[in-house]
Length: 250
Image (tube, rainbow, N blue to C red):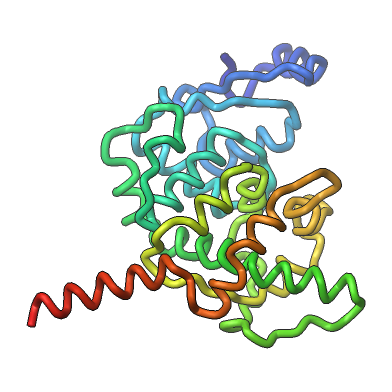
């Protein structure tokens, strides 16, 4: 177990053995939040953060920072927790998503306190349906066709760069598009995130498809037609439920 910043002698040992995975104690580290992530990202070694030993407030602080920061830092535990709070926000059961114990009430409180941040993640991930169209247009050397988008969001800081790590979770898109969302699936065009190399010198395509077999394309294509045509069964079910409530209140 290590804390950060590390003494020089320990730092030399860690850097010299960067094939190992180092357990990091956030609670007892002297730096927190952004400096904590900056330090580990620049250290460039494999780490595992012990989330179960953190207080609720510490976990809220670290997760919200991880979701907002524009420093690419891969952390499997935080990545899974991002997926869990996003699905919780959408009204999905997250009992089987997180394998570690989180403080009681954490999900509800984090979603309530960070609703704008999570909504941004939701809209960006929802827009990956149209990102598939963008990839196709680029492959044909065509200009992006903005037909069918709900709008353009030209904001380099709209979502933190660590959103791309969600795409490495094999079950993410299946769970995301199978959930009953609190808001409709929307499709926005993100010029900076779609087009530029803002992810440590890599583009979104590298993480979305990459140079390895990746199920994202097939999973999204499975849902794309229903979502873009407004016939998504989950949204239809929500509408039916709402109509039933209205009828019952008459």
